[in-house]
Image (cartoon, rainbow, N blue to C red; front, top):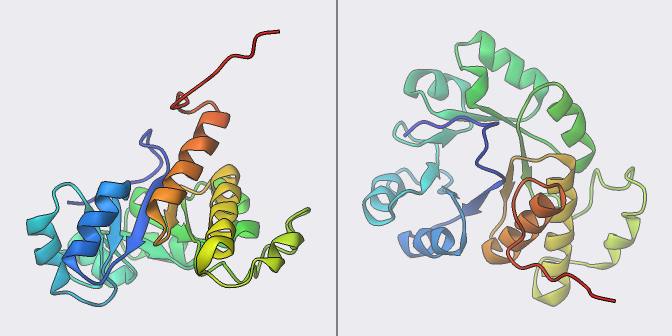
Length: 202
């Protein structure tokens, strides 16, 4: 099951998982993609148990990988660490429409302008590295860690920022919360109808 980016499907979520049960729960909460890391045995197990979800893993049968040679051989989509790596992957035979560029918030808009769909790893960004040059976001530094209410608030704030800047895929374990944030931003941007709307009457 290969995949491409930049269509009309909207923002997709990539959930890190270590079990089939976690993959099923993530899919039920709104993740179209799950990340099995290096555990190739999870690919057929998830494929057999969870219908419709696409799998990121360093495995020949995965839908999304992080190795350009593997992507070129298998036809999988590819996550690249930056635009230069993406351009190099195209030279190695990976179709441009199958490439995702991973970026911090400050790098999302330049990558999008260059024509690359972007993956934002929200938990990887939770130390706010790369956010300090974006006006008005420095105050998020007070939300330390990823656990509890404050940690989830940080992830939700990052999700909203990255979605607004143009990220195509958000990687997070907080699938339900981030799905709501992504849907909200797409509604604000006019790309989807709001789930619930109330018109104020004077």
